Amino acid sequence: ALPTAIASGKGPDVAVIHNDWIGTLAARQVLVPIDDVVAALKLTENDFIPAVWKAGIYDGKRYSVPLDVHCLGDYYNTGHLEKIGLTEAPADKAGYEQALAELKKAGVANPFWMPNKWPAHLMFMSLLWQHGGELYSEDGTKALWGSDQGVQALTWMVEQIDHGYSPAKVAIDTQYAAFKNDKVSLTWDGIWQINDLKTNAPSLTWGLASLPAIGGSAAVWSASHNFVLTAQAARDANKVQAAKVFVDHMSRQSTEWAKAGMIPARNSARQAPEVAGLPQVKLAADLSAFHFLPALPGVGDVQSKALELAVAKAVLKQSAPADALKEGVASADKLLADNKRKYGR
Image (tube, rainbow, N blue to C red; front, top):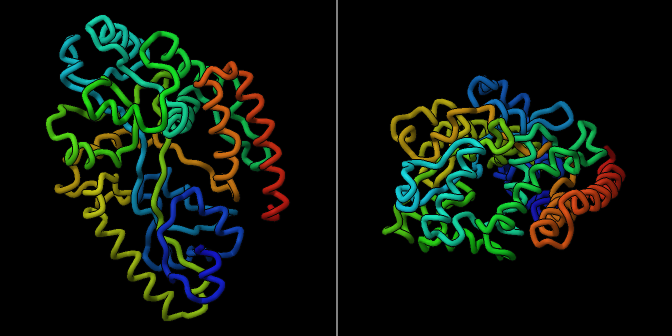
């Protein structure tokens, strides 16, 4: 594990981690602040997608330089949509629901499968934010996803099964497999699936759009790979200097990383001609839509042990959405209190 390797002096000087680990590893003093590194490189929020730049701040200090943004997208089967006179996925709730109804009438038995596990929780968070809800309180002591906005988000997910657009009890990733096999008209999944579709479903005709604004405003779960400086490197000024050069070089060269299906976080890389035409880049047309988990120490455990279980219970019809969320929030609040004691925050 990274913390053990760093403590023993056998870990990396520079690492790449997901943004939701920044708070946890910073609190454990595995990472060191890099405000001075960023200042030396003359990097500011103006060089990056604003939301992902802000996601690298913990306890008032900067701990990361973002490499990319990866988010959910709405994959659509162009052949299926042509049957109902559409060339792309609808962008609002009314249009989306009308399209699903027409697809079912056109012979697509279940046009939009609803998973109960991955990426169900990512869908829920996107819908929560679209309805104007928030995940956690600013001080990180309370889970807020059991709000009315959360209930609306989860209810919509369950309704897709009630309307017959999705079969019940969809197992993890089977909705994506069904899309690849031409059985599903629309599916929400990560942009990291782009290359898989190109390679392993060459005969499938498909497109990619931003998630529809089911809740009335654009919002999508997003994450990011980030460069961080470890406590091990901080002990050697030469390593810190080398890290500055390395991080700056890799950030500028993130055009290559974009070919893996990612959206470059750095504006100059995203605007490069060889990147601008990639299918995922159009999802960055509205930068305000990107939403990230807060940099709370231990937030990953809260997500997996509370939020994800609540979403699964509702989608599996084991509990009503409001009841599942109420129970989940109670568990989340206990975990948040434990984390506050554990990480001293």
